[in-house]
Each structure stands twice: as structure tokens, then as C-alpha cells.
Image: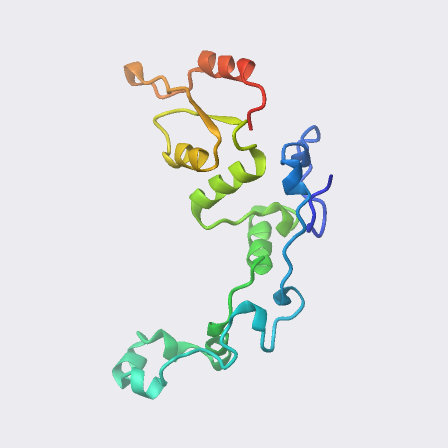
Length: 190
């Protein structure tokens, strides 16, 4: 089943890998959320809970001293009228312009190859929600590691199997034998 909402097919490399095969079927079946911003970028967008009268800002003459404006420390005074007008708008939900710039910088075909998150915690949580079946799947962590892997797994009802890193003698590496044992005995892991 294809990923709904993509403008073009996503990455297909390496050739033997298919992202669609590891995503939970109920996630693949979701219809993308649509809002007025998908079709309009100007005017009053009532569905967005935005202030239709523009930003609620104090008058520049009363909030900025002449010294602040001259010193360049009053950011508001440095903004154009258009920039000030947009302060009451939510940013783009898809961030296509930013993703296109990142795609060009990284040398990938287009914005479909770029994923943005609000920090690593959100990305980790999203991966668990999209790839792991609650109450059934397990993930492996390798302590000492980032604590949010375990916290987010617990929040999403995903089992956690810990395989500590080998640290004796100054080493800091995977216990390959324990990892391969985990992989061979735990089917249905995400």
C-alpha cells in the first residue's frame, strides 16, 4: 500500500528496501489531514484559530525607544510591514521551502527525502508509533544510551530489551553476540 499524501514516491534505495513494508497497515491507511492552509495562504483562515485582525502588538512608538531602534536591538522595529502582518499566522505545516533548501544542501532529489521533527524526542516517538505495534513489538537498546528510547517505548507500550554495551578495558562497543541472540529469538520486533 503506498504512503498517502506524498506528492511523489519517496526514497527507494537500497533497491531491496521498502519503507511501506515496515509501516503499520493502519498508519498507511490514514488519510492525510487537510486544512484551509493546504489551499489558501492569504485571507482570513478561521479554521486555523488565527487572529483575523493581525498581530496583537503594541504600537512601535510606545514600545521602542529611539536608542533601541538605532542600536538595532528592537527586532520588531527591524521587521517589514509584511513580516509583522504574518506574526499572527501559524508557520507552514509542511515546511516545503525549508525542506527543499535542505534537500539541495544535502544533494537529495526533493523535499520528500527530508524529514523534520521538533527535536529527537518527537522523531523517536513518531518512529515507535508508526513502526511498532503496541503490546506486541519490542525494541533493543544498548545502555548506556539516550534515556528517551526506553521512556518513549514505555509510553507507546513497546517492550524494551536491554543489551548493555561492552565497556570493560575502556571498550565502548556493541556486544555482537548478545545482539545476534536478540535478533534470532525475537520475531515481531520493530
